Amino acid sequence: MRPDVIPLFLDEGIFAMSGYKDTPTIGVVDRGAGIYEIRVSYTIFYAPNELLLPEGWFDSVALFESDKGEVPGGDDDRLFDLEPRFFFPQSTEETRTFSILRTRDQLGAESGGEEIYAVVHHVRGVPGLKSNKRRTAGFPLAV
Image (cartoon, rainbow, N blue to C red; front, side):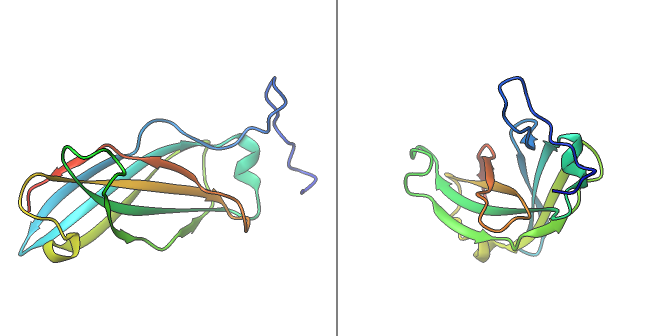
């Protein structure tokens, strides 16, 4: 640990870690010609000492398709995963957005009756750590 980084402990003695402010959001915009823009946004908090960590952070997103009426996670199709993005947070609260362009065929959705959702992964840049995952609500897809 760098000498200028002071660990921040909560009353319970647990190291304060980054955390999601709320549920990430997902939206889809029809760009025409069979192209769709999927936007996934989330807001995350960092402890002040986490801004100084030399290893930085990574985030990524996975997109899933789910038939309406199915139990979430039951028979969902994983559509794609984005490569992790590396970054250093600049403030103790940051909103980060993914913007993904895909064709109707790449989304693999049938007309009506389906929805998509995303799972955001956020992790400190240390090999072997598990990512902090958070799921968006479903977004009805009528492509």
